[in-house]
Image 1 (cartoon, rainbow, N blue to C red):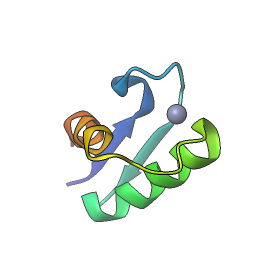
Image 2: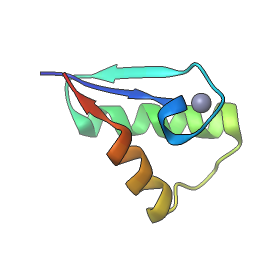
Image 3: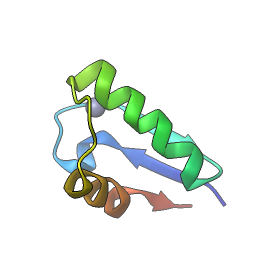
Image 4: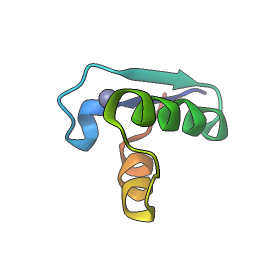
Length: 58
Ligand SMILES: [Zn+2]
């Protein structure tokens, strides 16, 4: 099983996509992308919930 995340699923106009075997591995990748590409230095609990809801298991 793997987990995937698409930035546009949380309402961003962005083509970023991340994939990992574990959710714990996916989060740091998303965090780094949020910081590097969107200037989001801190993932708020609200944003974290949105991200988690957008993560798909495949
Ligand atoms: Zn993005």
